[in-house]
Image (cartoon, rainbow, N blue to C red; front, side, top):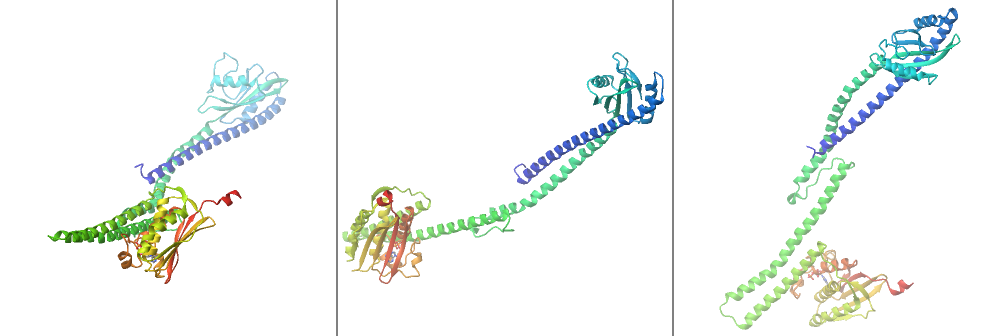
Length: 488
Ligand code: ADP
């Protein structure tokens, strides 16, 4: 159950809300209690003023040794309220007059009234240390708030004590507490039910999205999630998911096309191999020459197969990012010269003149065998697609921060509408010719691999010109900083 975000959200929400409400209730209780006490204290202080004024006036009307006692009785009668206790003590702690039984101040006397004698005694003891004093006195139902002050009358010092019962305040606080005690749980229950439905409502699109996403597989990769509101977070999520599906389906389609093209390319040499072998085996008596001829065809097709499989393997490793480059330092101009030398036999066979224009020293750090493969691919194509007696020119120079290696032929060129596609895998502009004249390759993978090689070296490979008088393929490869640049 806790695995559901809805439930977790609701629990978190309820927990935080409960905490906030309880803390709020405690703070409110504390503030309420303090302000009640403050009001009581102000009340007691004012009452004492009024009481002493009355006492003063009454003392003047009395005579004799009990004048203060009599005046006190009159003042008490005048100011007496149901929940107040008045008492006047003399300097040694004897009761002069009191509104009800209070515990005698003198130690050892017997307790009286509802007041706790111990608590009252402590309060009185404190009176010797202060001129005015507020304090709590236990007794009655909820205790008393006590106020004591010294005053002088008839030439002597006395202590006036007024106690106010805290029963009414306590009752009010209890009422507030009991109200809060049922309001908070109800608020929490209501809020958590509301929170659960809110969480459910807000997460409903996610649930819908996940079940929609769960239905999308290889068979219906073209389906997309419905975007309710493209401006909110869930809309963004759906859009991101959809664009992920776009990319996935594109790469899936590419993969499928690649597989279909690859199997198509492999089928032809395999069919030739099988056919040739069947023909050779079906005839009882064949001459040695005929066998040699058949084996020659088998060998040729096997070579072609090997070539295609190697190219496919290179591309699939490149796609998976698993073709580690093995860079080392060498001279690009020397590598180009070597490749031109290797291709010379091919060119000679077609009476094509193959020229490498003199190049200056071109140090480079790269994967030599991959660059060799790229240059040979380009040379091979240039010779393959140039008619007899034509010319292939190779040039290598440095321009700024890069080496520019161009291979120009005098072949028939590539039709303009097909030029953008020649770097695609398995694409052949002139299928019949590319297969008929090749020497074991021609699956339309050469240029894709060559472009990947240039890009793996942070360079690029482009068809810079192609028309009826020939084509130029140019590879741009990053050059190391030139010595003049590094010393300047
Ligand atoms: P292929 O093995 O068919 O040569 P590539 O990937 O090397 O495959 O070349 C793709 C296609 O580009 C070729 O089939 C050919 O039609 C065209 N092409 C490549 N190089 C040249 C060129 N120098 N002149 C004319 N066409 C070319």
